[in-house]
Image (cartoon, rainbow over all chains, first blue to last red; front, side, top):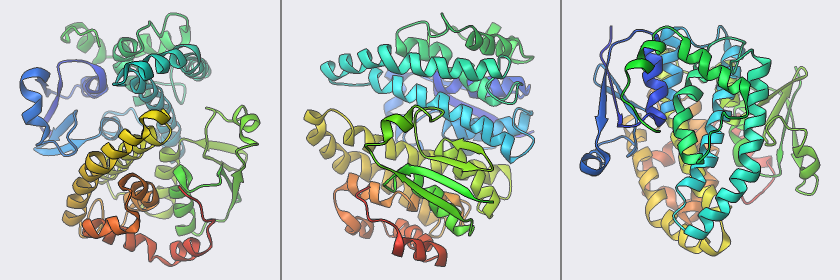
Length: 204
Length: 203
């Protein structure tokens, strides 16, 4: 079995879907957590695109969390059976990523006035729009995001949810029961259940 | 099997899809929506966005997912999952750069000048020099030392990167390996023919 080392910050966010995929596949991995204040500045220059997470597979450095997730999903049986099914999962994951990017655009805005304005639009329009659309997809797929079954799109969303709540500054699942079902279904999956019980506590 | 692609009158995120369809010699209707018509069409789109690709009554959206799907059809995907991961990482990186440029372009107007300066001096050089190093290692390609949809995905956005660099085509002189990636794609017969006839747009 290849040696896996994940390097990320000491938070869930974009590292968590990868941790969940490896856990689901019962693949042992080194969960390397970088101290942002102390270590990131010097680490950053050594990263392929100056970002985390990275996953080392037998020493080869892989980056881009969605690409890594898609790859691991194939290893652990959480991808589609054909190209069309994989498209459906990719589509769901891309929608989730779009949602994340829109929230992040507000959260990481450096100009205070622009930030406030962005959060206004986020709360009034963007978040309700995406939550309704995503909830509908989850309803059509019986508490999943694609193919009416557990796929890596479910893990991508569930891995991110605490982080999304943190940067959105609200409980995104409060009024969307189908999305809550996705998270529940994922947390109940073998391997992930054990991981969630023992993982370091984080608010994002 | 008639495909129908709908997007604005621009290259944008539809262009890599057009490149892949042309490369695969797949006939498609290249529908361009007027901005004035967009508000009412937007409501009919699955996630309120374009491009959208229709085939046999089914609608496909999310441009990167579509590209990955088409690449498999036209023989531009990896030959194993590790190769596909390598290609995906490049496509995602191109998306990261594109989003940073678009954030400035479509961001608050009073911050635009400052944003464009950061793009020109920091962001675009950072990404392009990293991608150039990757293209050097891969002999004028962006993944797997061969032509893949990663090359097409990059080549389709050159006008966007030129916009961010604020230098026009001259910018590629600084990144010779990326220039090779661009030329490798643009010299393909079907792509060359498409470039000669495609509508001229700013982005």
